[in-house]
Image (tube, rainbow, N blue to C red; front, side, top):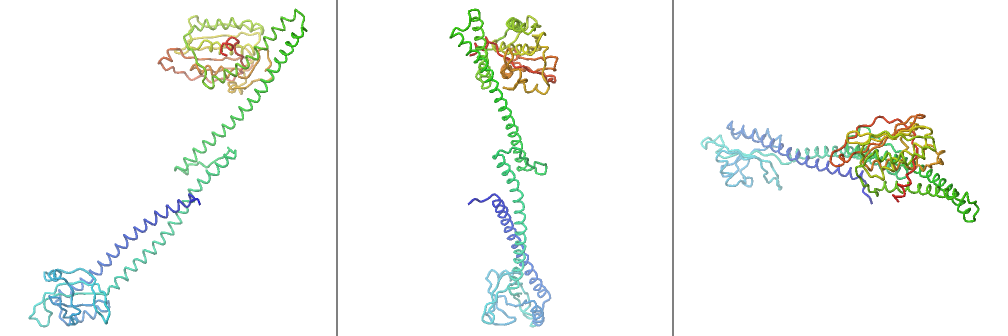
Length: 508
């Protein structure tokens, strides 16, 4: 059977309280007993001192004895050897003192309170007794001879007072225990209520409800409050993760539908062409065009597969970059030459604006892949406009910009364009150059793998500018390149880029 935390707390508090109260009661009891003992002793010694100092006669002592009897106090007078001479000469009542005690009395010392025993009508009476020296002249017959006196009272009087103390302590102990028990139960319930809230929240999360809200007000500043705060942070994180998973799953499903659609079209075309060639349906002039169409559709399928493979390799950190210092101007010239024909099909013109001594540090093939994807993207969403390849050195960074005058990107979509499977305009998925919805995700991952940053500025109807900043070799060799905070990025249209055929085939 489980010993629940509530009862553990109550038992713990109660145990500590009971031990504390027991120790306190014991100390108080001892102190009060000492006080009672000291009070009785002082009272008896005071009576005895008055008798001794006033040189009372037998008749005086007899009168005082009668007066003190009302307080159950009795007086006895003894000779120096311990023999009793008042109120009786019966020696069974003699003082049973040791030689050392008798010697101390003869030297004028009082004997403190002690328990003595006296026969009384067939029974033994216990008495609380003190002894005082009595120095008298034997020639004075009206006076007692030298010896000592004792004053006694029944020990029951002392015990009665002690019992009253015990009763009061026990009563107080019971009241304190009841109050302490109530406080411990209330405190335990208060603490366990916090735990139950966390327990209930945990069960809700287990059931799939991540919208749990705990009370994390500033009222509770203990460890439970900190735990509730951390739990709420975890819950909020799980809720965000769930939403992100849902969003990614939606994008994935959309991508699968788009990818299936993209694959189905070229596969259908390829199947028809192959069947025509197999049965020699096409006339000779059309055979060459049919083979070109077959090659184009094949490359389209390869491009789609490679983009996904590239992204997965980058995401799982399975790519290795062969970084070196390159002439950025020559690289940009090569890309402009490679894509000029494709740009001309849309009426676009690729313009190069970069100094000839511009350097860039990185993996050549991957840098080509990045820029070709961005330029192809610009061509796809531009028509009869200039596409500018701009480059400058900024301290320990090389900054490249790919600027177009195309349709731009909506501000609401600019943060999403870097997501895998995301497509700005699904209706354009079958454009001439294709669109898989993964190109920009690959580009961003490759830039970050180089230790750089990429952002986009865009305005609907005005065009887009993709800005890449890559550290130079000096920054990686020891100097820590400090990237200035980017200007507030305007929202843009991100086209989805297709990788360079040459780069893709080399990366396979």
